[in-house]
Image 1 (spheres, one colour):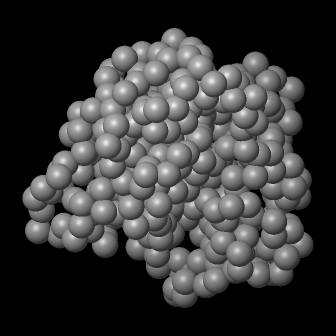
Image 2 (image 1 turned 180 degrees about the horizontal axis):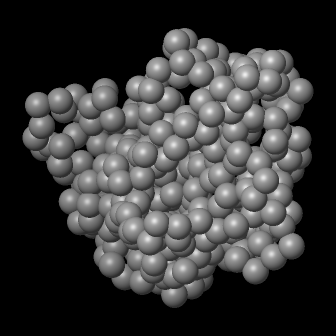
Length: 363
């Protein structure tokens, strides 16, 4: 069945439908990863977005039960050059078409994803809509220009109630703004006793859980849309060691007096080079964000930059000058992506253990 993707700037792409036949509106973004489509589509940071995958063949190893980052797809729609009809992999359980149909998520294939990506790179992320081929594109584009971007994404993806993943190590409170399973997995691998709490949990209630460390998770949208989270992070600073990832990094920056701004088209992919300013070493990272910490806004704060992106020089890591607190914009848990930055979890736990030891000595 013929379908079309219409962008707010009037650009139109005609393709074939797969997944659900429903119409869907969202912010159109692109991801450059050559693999990992299942993890990408279940990443809560993509909630409300229509994702373009630049690699031309998607779905060739099907869908399995092992590679989810959340319990269901989080994207609003999917755009690909070709959706594989006959996947081949020993873990394959269903096609990407069947999986998206199951969750009522539309897809469109057979369009020029290279041209679409170039448009996004030139104009920035754009509102788009996947609709039937007989809809008037000019009318759709006009409606898109009036369509307000959502501001409640975090509330849609955060856990509704706290839960515990028991362990014999330090107690880590993971504040869930849309946390990927990979972050929880890395904590479990290191023996942590993890308590996952909703994003609206107050600082006082978090401290009642007697955490040895606090993790601020990734999540979707503009960090300024969750002012209560910024306030909570500010109140937690200095209590116990703190580690922010992606959206958690941005909230940490805002809580410390820095500023964030929207990027033209963001960083989304698994091959983004980042420089560690302290060691001088480089790492290849997995990233998914549309906002960044404004470098000039660090002046006058107690934050110092620890990492920068090689491609555009944007801030990729921060450390507090007085407190045991740091953050990174990229994803050290990857999923998908390289494991170059996974030692950051060990660095966080070293900070936690040092704080616990010092606390015991002075108790």
